[in-house]
Image (cartoon, rainbow, N blue to C red; front, side, top):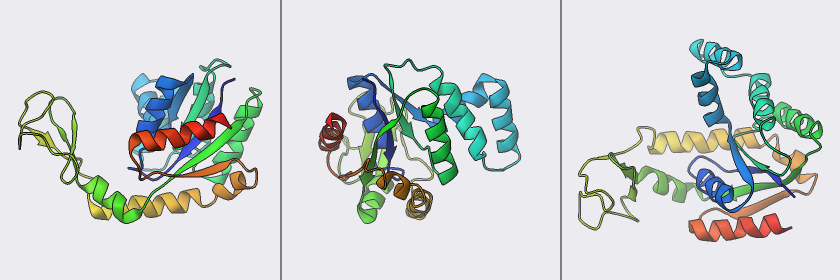
Length: 217
């Protein structure tokens, strides 16, 4: 039976990594609103044009528009394919909209999984990361440097890059934004008894093992 879950956690907590692992191990598909917004714009669809117009005006995409994107994407999932909601819902209105979207398809949320992280450790994790400019292999100033200094282990390139927003000020702002946005929705799901908080600071394998235990319930 397909399971629908919400994966919560601040940027850098490892949601994307865990979502990809779930996709590989289970009949599940990650529904990332950020990816979906970009894909909608690129597609040139009517919905994509609406999104583009809002973004061009420098405004935030409305709850309704985001929910419409989710609605459209859910139509593409078969009944035996579970959804991993990443970045949605972010507001109470979106949470109620998701309930309606799932109800119409005889689906329901099975779990809300929050990856809990230590802010100081997360700042260290994010600000120290960088990638090979050629192949995208990931490294870290403290935890994973190339075997030969300045040379990528995977492809031998000597060019590396860092994301411009991987700095302490931006990371701390993301953390504050995350807390502000999740605060309204967590009580809704806590009241249903479907929230599980797990340690997101362990290894990728350790975090995955915790998620797998939740999914067995």
